[in-house]
Length: 240
Length: 113
Image (tube, rainbow over all chains, first blue to last red; front, side, top):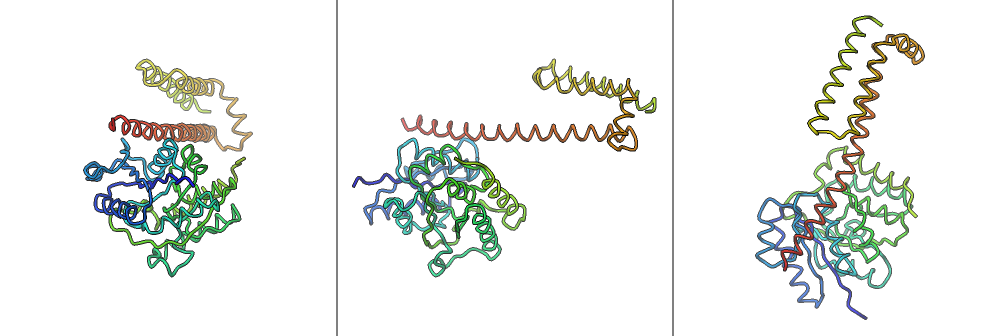
C-alpha cells in the first residue's frame, strides 16, 4: 500500500518557549518509528521570537501577515494540506499540551477507513490522561457535548479537543469553510451533521508548558452562550 | 404637533442634508449610501410640513404624543441600520481573513524560491 502523506499542522501564536520542543519531539518520533509526519507551523502573527526560531531551525512554516486567531490560523493549515495533496491532516497544539506518541492512534482509523475524522479525547479513558482540565471547564465541555448530542444524536466527549485528524474529504471541507470563532465544537457538529464518520480515541494531554489558552473567556458565561447557540444554529441550518 | 417641534425637525432635516452633501462631495461615501440619508431628510421634512399625517399614525400605533412617535421611528431606523452594518462588517471580516490567508501562503511560496 502506498504510504499516506501526513501533515501535522501546528498553529502558533507567541509560542517561543515551547514551539521548538514540540517540533523536535515530532522529528525524533519520526526517526524512531520510521514515520513520515510532515510539519507545518502556522505562525499567527506572533510578536515574540517564534518566527526567528522557525527560520533558524528550517521548520516549514507560513507566517500570517496579520493575527487571525485560532480558527483562521488552523484553516490556513487545511488550505495548505489541500493544495499540497495531503491524505491526512492533523491539528496539533504548539504549546506542548499534545503528545506525539498518540498521533498514530488518530491516524489509524482513517487509514483503515473506519472514520473520516478522529478526535483525540481526554475523557474516553480517564485513566490515560492525568491532566483533565479544571472542573469549570469540564462542566462547560459536558454542556457542549449535551448540545451536540441534541443536534446530531451522536455523543462526543472531548468537544473542545484541539488534537484532531482529518481525511481528504474533511480537509477539503475545512479548506473551503472553517468557522473563525469556537471552531472545534462547531466543525465537529457540522461534519457530524453532514454524515461523516467521526471517532474519538483516548489520548493523554499535558498541562500547557507556555503561552496562553485560546479559550480565555472560559469563566465567562458569554463564551458558553455563544458556543451553545452556534451549535444550535448548525442544527437548524440545512446541509445537503 | 407644536410649531417649535416642526421648526426643529426642519432644521434637523436641513443639517442632515447638508452633512450628507459635504461627506458625499469629499468622496467619503458612495452615492448609494448617501441616498438613504437624503431619503431620511426628505421624510423628516414631510413630517414637519404635513403634521396631521403624524397625528393619524401616532393614534394608529398607540403613541401618546407625536414626539414619542418620531423618537420611535428614529430608533427603529437606527436599529435596522446597525443590523445592516453588522451584516456588512461580518462579510468584510470573512473576506479579510481569506485575503490574509492567501497572501500569507503566497508570500511563503515566493520566499522559498
